[in-house]
Length: 121
Image 1 (cartoon, rainbow, N blue to C red):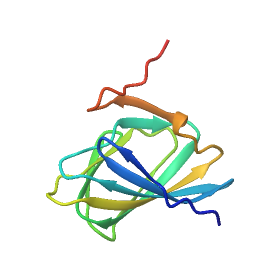
Image 2: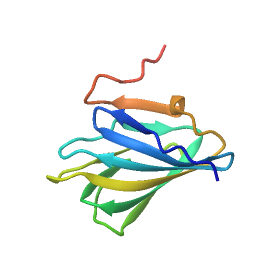
Image 3: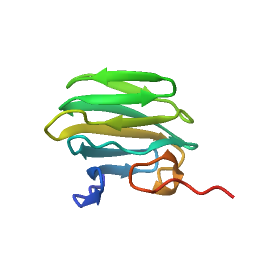
Image 4: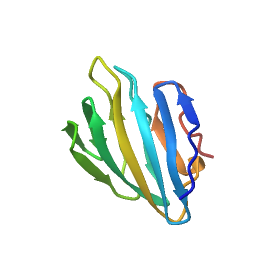
């Protein structure tokens, strides 16, 4: 298993790649209090999110799920999704990606608090 301990910082928090292999990618993602990721979807991968600590509000298509540590959710390929930290401390979760491509350019941003919405031609 290859490991990259480098943390990649974003406006909402940061992530660390724990495993990056041809058949999967695993990240540890930390979301700062009151922040949320883009409302997004992926064409080439599915994800499984396992909450480690803190609270998470997950938008999954037309549902809103409230998750606590030890709980998880599956994000099917093509599903519209996002995660938010409504708490006052950092929230962390493990993301397991499966599919045939794991590049960051497979993120189609539909809404974003930081002006990073995908521009379609």
